[in-house]
Image (cartoon, rainbow over all chains, first blue to last red; front, side, top):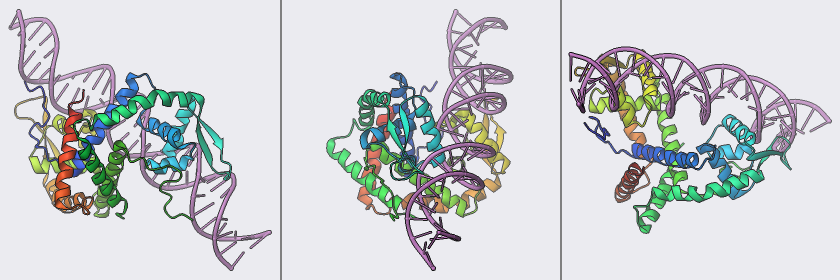
Length: 153
Length: 153
DNA sequence: AGTATGTAATTGCCTTGACAATCATTGTCT
DNA sequence: AGACAATGATTGTCAAGGCAATTACATACT
């Protein structure tokens, strides 16, 4: 019996969107598994928000949503959850009374210290078979594709 | 007023997962928009299923799910929708009475003829700024990363 | 000042997709 | 043959995220 049914009569097309899709899914599963394994009770999107704030300081919900290509309503609910878990706090915005500033609580900073170790590791795992020059080349090409897409109306 | 708020105080990290994420989202939006614009009432996942069957012949639901990294339950409901719209038909499987074979109806084949034109176009749009050698290099690198991830337990 | 237009966050509603349980059938093992 | 594990599809239930409408505030215009 075939142990790896992989391509059951479907030939691998390896088109660009398919490759990107497969890699994205692989990365996501990889990181979510590490989060679960380490007992951190947050998901992929939530961990990204924590990461952004940890690296760039407090942010407005709208900016977080835009940066993650996320809907604003989804961001509201995502922040609800992070706040319920005590990792994040909504503070009024100094200049704009409509807006908020999302800050990490001490628990949130502690969470980030735990996460950041294996997150970096998980991100390099996918590239472990590439030499430094190939990695650089890959990054360059991907950035160009991203910029091309950004400019596509 | 800033017309492009892009990075509002969040510096672009351009990490590998982030690049992949952005490119995936860009491609998905691009293709979904083309589907909408051309009046085809199916979404991204559904169009992939039609594409696979059109290119590889009738398939079992389970194989479609595995190939698209999709849950089997989700595939059942996805096929329900394609069947409701008349693009696809469930036939009993010749060898295995548990299984089904999913075939394109005439309407489904007609749909594919309409789609295939701009789908190919949409897929190349993202790569339009890359020379042939760079495209080849990019494909090579991405395949290697994908294979690395496949082998990561 | 006053009006209009734009933006920030929130909420309700809906679709998509994941997970677990279930049923039918197949293959394996003794 | 009979027991038993493995597989194919389906269903219920749930979480994540998109869209549209709403409310509150800010900015621009006259």
